[in-house]
Amino acid sequence: MSNFIQTDLPVSRPRRLRRTAVLRDMFRETRLAKSDLIFPLFVATGENVKREITSMPGIHQLSIDNVLRECEELLSVGINSILLFGIPAVKDETGSAAIARDGIVQATVRAIKDRFPDIVVVTDVCLCAYTTHGHCGVIRDGEVVNDESVDLIAEQALTHAQSGADIVAPSDMMDGRVAAIREKLDENGFANTAIMAYSAKFASAFYGPFRQAADSAPQFGDRRSYQMDAANADEAIREIVLDIHEGADIVMVKPALAYLDIVRRTKDEFNVPVAAYNVSGEYSMIKAAAERGWIDGTAAMMEALTSIKRAGADVIITYFAKEAAAELDK
Ligand code: PBG
Image (cartoon, rainbow, N blue to C red; front, side):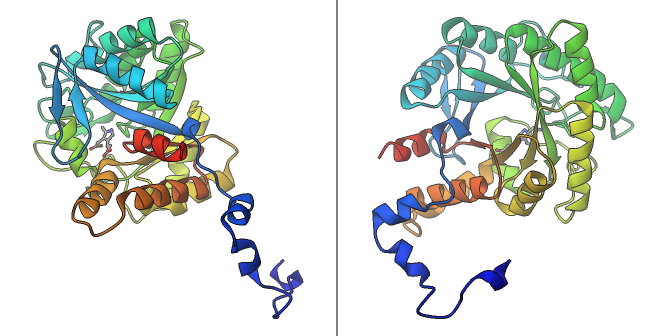
């Protein structure tokens, strides 16, 4: 391919098309749009709660009333989809608050859909914020057991669908959970509820700030027996193949920035919608450096988001969604 291109001066001068802002805009290959962005929200119990998450400047835990206010604001700036995380009042060994019909996420979805039926509501499906031990599944003899966890996770997904969620997003990384969720949804008349699978989810240090936000840090050990090893790209592709076969409508790569090669491979190898999660640590690093005056935070944000889109992501889950929307309006 490249040998057909004339590479000698003066025929080839790439700077010709970079000369003016209008030319650069005309030949820009990747365009970020507000419709690409999903904004995560942390919902807590209580009323009029707006609790700052110190490790994520600008992001808060909100009670349902404030979530509704936030949705209104998001819609007004052109962000039409959200990802919900619940922080329950009580936790237990098996995370039973995760599958309660009147649980925090379930109640929030109903309240949102009642007021804003058109907003796309994605729910995070996982037990870690609901278990006392903070792991994403059930513990037996010190181990996170797979199949018993999958049963609970499928049940949790069903309660989210029954509450009105448009998309359920399992983030637990148990084997076989996408198939179990699809079957459970279909059996109960929710054939139209989509699944966005956290398919290639890596055990990552970049989740640190989130665990403060969602109060979901593991109380012993780590997540390496279920989340992926950062070194593995072929295995990520195998995980993605499995989830596509099990019925995922959207596959996700997470985190985004340190894993853009996985995003690109996924887009190149499969004709499926790809999501990338621009995680908490990726957000906080830019915020922290910008606060110190070390980088231009807005420019770094737009560059990071554009790179995720350029790598092949169709949608980006990002704490920057609101700020990026403002920037895209300029
Ligand atoms: C729950 C979950 C996590 C994130 C999304 N869902 C944390 C984890 O696996 O420890 C991370 C999101 C972020 O860092 O922004 N399993």
